[in-house]
Length: 185
Image (cartoon, rainbow, N blue to C red; front, side, top):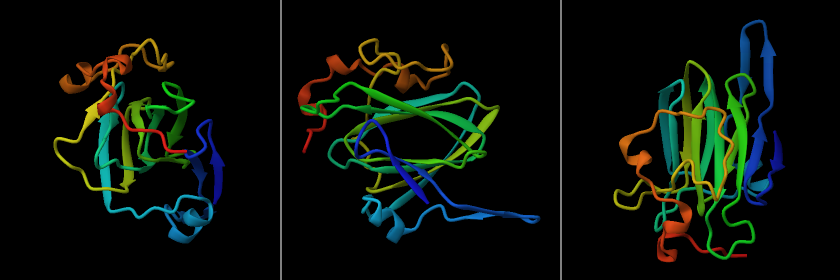
């Protein structure tokens, strides 16, 4: 497995080893020892599966008291995956990183708690899996407006389909500090 740090030092792109032959392929989607050696020493407690169609945008989501680190990968299709640093006091506060994840490139991204996360579907449909470091907690879910001009995400689809809830998310500057995670160096 190849682990690459992104613009955010605690956000990693992971390229699993893929073993192909005439029958198809095999790959490890997670190996605790290898991830810990790379600096991702987390316990994952919940797996989530999402199916969406072209143009759907999910995000930008985060949890505060029960922050979920996420290991995200695509089973079928392709997404443009986004991470935004929303940690109060972070030198990279309000900055974003985006990458393509697909069934073809088999890349993964690890997003620790403290970041907002979202994606937009580029293929006809997509199946996304993500492992979480904490359990989903109703009432501890927050969001940021997907097209916040102060963040300036360059989404590859300009008029995405959003849930009613996501379309009403506030801009980052409209969120009181007590509803954002703190930066810990």
